[in-house]
Length: 160
Image (tube, rainbow, N blue to C red; front, side, top):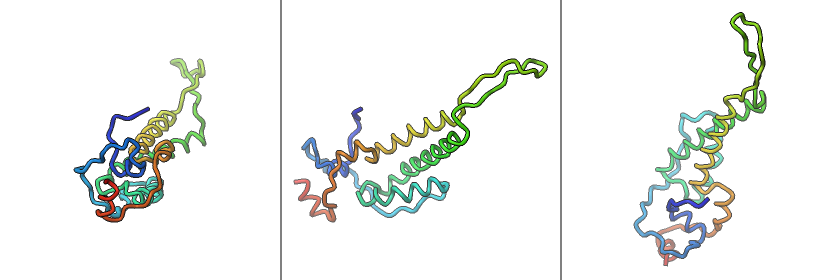
């Protein structure tokens, strides 16, 4: 499904500027600086941060202003893993026994665990974050592993 959102220039450059349109000259360039893992992340979220941030930094897709988005991604990822862990252990559904006023069992029925819905919501949220940062297979296919631009002079040459 195509997106109407503009792509960051860094992603356009990695893709080789397929539309051959002029790249924006006045796009804000946030500071690219090593970011520490936020303290609010649990061990699962912190491990995911440590797994993806170095690669995003290497591709110049992670700047100082992206910290909250990646933190949100890691929180959603952690909740997704926890919900899936419960589902793996306990199954997708559980049995509820309906009783009458005296407490006598009347009938049984099955209900989906709350973790089914949590896992689904978090998986959708993780995917949205992944699309924003070019971390899906379809996003990677469009990227080219070109030479990393080291300074402004090389960037100007590339843009010309």
